[in-house]
Length: 260
Image (cartoon, rainbow, N blue to C red):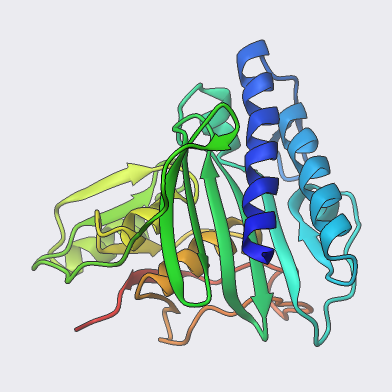
């Protein structure tokens, strides 16, 4: 039931995003110079309204609300992490690789997630240790859900990297692993490609925030993958009062199918 509500919220937000996509977005810029559009705000309002109505006792950490200084107390509680439009630059460039991300965190672990790519008409979801995928048309799921899972990695593995935020450290890591086959993809779709066995590793040696990764990470973990920091620890969520970074900022990480 919870996952279905998350799915419906993501699809409703995606339909609002597509309306702005077709009409042409109005763009402003945040303090960190990153763009934000009216689609981000419309989508977040829809998600917040639906999740709050269904789960009034669960806090929601949402990107644009945090930017506006609205950060609920999450200490010791399950909570949602929401990125209403992940891949805003792709959206502005009319590239179809942008997503709506809704993740559920319990004890610092992403236990459920929905990633909806409205321009591609594809939605991924995970909960209770199972990951799945289906198609969406005209704001509705139009096909049966099918289970997805990570594949046994070939040697060398196939990598996905950030299209907009790749780094020299990422390329150096790929070179050190002998990986020459990689694709640059926007948004949280990188996690989903690993989860459905189309790629094997996603090294991220540049900045991300928890709302960027939680939903995709939940899907990857349910599909048999993992996301580890460079120290080899599972990426944790709900990071507050960090000594060397802002609240909810992630360290560098590597996502991959678990070794067999």
